[in-house]
Image 1 (cartoon, rainbow over the protein chains, first blue to last red):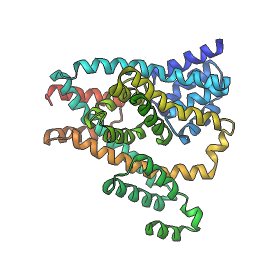
Image 2: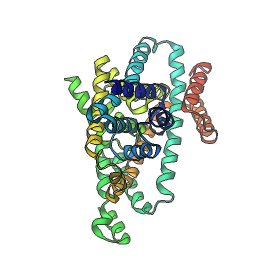
Image 3: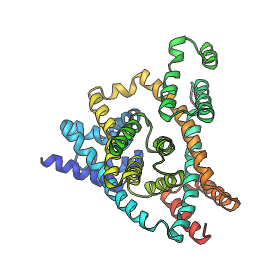
Image 4: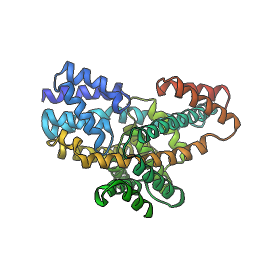
Amino acid sequence: MKILWKLFVSFFKTGLFTFGGGYAMLPLLKAEVVEKQKWATEDELLDYFSIGQCTPGIIAVNVSTFCGYKLKGVIGAITATTAIILPSLIIITLIAAVLEKYMHLPIVASAFAGIRLGVTALLINLIFDMGQKIFTQNPHWRLHAVIFVIAFALLMFGDVSAVLIVIMAAVFGFIPELFGKKIPFIKGGNKK
Amino acid sequence: MIYWLLFYEFFKIGLFAIGGGAVTIPFLFDLGEKYHWFTTEQLVNMIAVSESTPGPLGVNMATFTGYQTAGVLGGIVATFGLTLPSVIIIILIAKLLKRFADNPRVQTLLSSIRPGVLALIIFAGWQIARISVTNWLSAAIFAGILLANRFFKSSPIFYILLSAIIGIVLQL
């Protein structure tokens, strides 16, 4: 019981002081999980992150579930995950309730008109970074370019859901494995 | 029933949004289009608040969109739905641990999903830009923030605060 409470406090603190999520959480978790509580080594924590990135869902949630599971099984996993999302639930619910009241004020509306520009700029920069990562130093960039173009065309000209795009991209990734060498598969990919 | 629908839709997002919080944005965009629970403008406001408050971006967005749709319980149900696939999957693969991440098939799967996700985010980014950038003044501010963020890496909160101040001063 005591260890579950400790687990809860550690992950609640991490959820409360992390902005953005994902790898932004790493230094905080390292301080709590590795250095203070000694529940895992640094290498193990990095493993959790690399697995958390590969599995569906929010990385922060995946890593918390993993840490909790390793320490105390299923009940540990549920404790750590509840603790990491609880600060978000409380803070966002409060903010959403307050915003609902004041959104119609001209000064709040102006602030959000400005903020929307900032968020759009941040998102565009994130897109640049993602694109750079995908198309440089990637041996499969040709196949990935084909997947990208097909996905984009489907979004532009068809009414396709995000779920279907993800499934389509995953299936296309296995074409080289199914149809042999690189050059024939690119042709195969284009024919579809 | 709205709560069941929220749970189902966010469970799907938790299952298919692979690669972190920002990947949930195009999925939420889909939700807005499909059910009209919120407008694109509201979605961008929610992204802004989620980025500048503590907690993982994806979790914040789920709570916010859930609240916007069906109040406090809606926020809880959406967040629970988003989290559940992660918890189930991690518990199932926990024993395989590192072998899972190093498996070449898993690597192929992940790396080929990425260009699809890129297309999704660009498409969402385009829709968001269309409702944010409405005239020459806003286009100029947008370009300024874009370049500043490109060359002076600072925390997103800094840029969100900065753009709020610009919005108030210029009465956008």
